[in-house]
Image 1 (cartoon, rainbow, N blue to C red):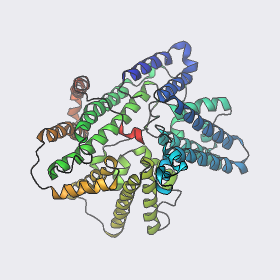
Image 2: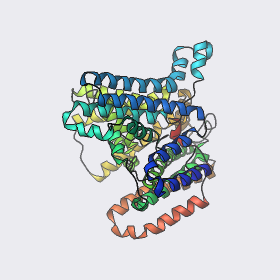
Image 3: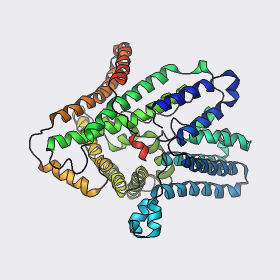
Image 4: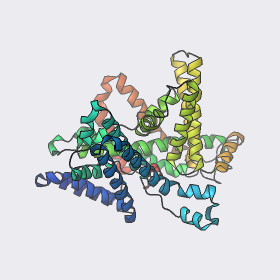
Length: 472
């Protein structure tokens, strides 16, 4: 179910009305859980059983960690993590395993594994489940944080079941994040009042989110659809640069738009979700990019993978290796194809090289150099998005070959104009962010900006398309 579909607006409206009825206040969590189950099961009802299984695994293991004797807590923590990872591996990576090691459809087992459906959002709600199990275990092992564990796992199993069902299935972030950690969400589970809604925060997030998705991303997709094999083979270098630039703008607008909509919806029901994007395309380093892009994922990888591997505490060589490992696995998290692993490895290599340079050279801090650094990071990131749009290596290589050899004037001027037109608001979005921080008077005109955004949503939305990150 898409956030910009009519059926979702109906579900949202009914859920919102029921949620704030005075005589249903004691059942608010149940209303949200029911709405979330409907949201998830709308297109493929059978996959609801997978979500229920994931909820059951995390409810039982996290509760047993909290109530069982200390010597068995580690066993339940390991069991919870292993079962979460097993579900993810089976449903997301079985086709990749079959194609790589079993000859694809050439064997009975290979044919079976290839047919396993990819459940929408499994990467997101699995990582949230792992965060629950690990956080409860860490708190139980640390006597200073026992009360923190009690805030997540109450004494009543049924209350923990109810709370965890909401944590795992809350529909604003269920299928594409942000990835919310247990300690961020559970303390917020309490009766909500209509009078306490942060209407301004909800309005801002929803308007900007829907604008980025419906006006920018959904219109850019019509132009970037030509960035597919074999359509691009005879296009000029200038047009090929425009394609990959447009796709970079599209994927930002699509995913940042989704995250803002999720944050706005959370505000409507009294829940504050973490910021997932902080203007990543102005980053002056690759490490800064990953502090600004998909913040909830990079934070999760750092806390639950990079630090346990040793982080940067075991010498420079181990630091570089850890960066490679984390980004390789982060790439695979994005999709069950080796191209995503290569994409992650490219980012891991960039992070390791950047760390090496920082260890050897102290770069001066000036506007010109910072601008060149930002341009370098953006160009690298944008070019790497090719592996998202062209997941077959030979197609990406053909694109790069055409990019450097088709040195003639572009002919499809309307496509270039369309990509520029719908990329320009993203540039303005970044410029407004800079200007608002430096010129206080600009805030007086925000009402006009939001009026224009709402008008564009109504008058100039593109044809509906699934969010890009739904496939992950």
